[in-house]
Picture 1 (cartoon, rainbow, N blue to C red):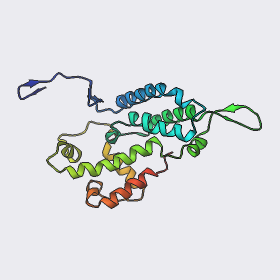
Picture 2: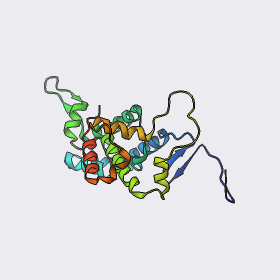
Picture 3: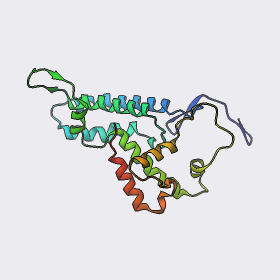
Picture 4: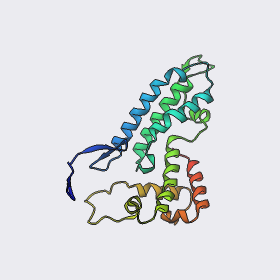
Length: 214
């Protein structure tokens, strides 16, 4: 690719601002990289999370302040399918089970892994998918405030030329926003104009944070 007098080599994927970008505009490689970095961070603090000297609440704070930010770096721009959301939840549940430990049943007297309902009760904070949804909704307003002079705004609201290829259209970032708005009962809301009423936007972000994610 030639831009002005500079030549850029074509690549299938590359790193930009610590984010993996691919020529297919797929988020799978980025999620894989984020989860790998999160697992590496977990192993660094594994001794703290497995220590019996720390309370469960303190272990949850360590997870939310050290591990979770690494996994969710740049998540505001992610376009997630149900399969990718499930992958993120499975990864979080795996860490929570190791952190909160097993449970012993009274009748058989055997130790077992915590069920999903038990994890949700012990981990009172919003799940990883709910955090992504709320951050994505908040980021819409920030981009809208930038105005038409900023490239990020033009990319968000712009319409590319040409036609889509045949077959089922790929799930877009915009589709995620519209689905979240519909789930909270705000059908017909123009999501691109959320910044005009900041109180309503913040209220919508809080409602999305409390969405029930299967």
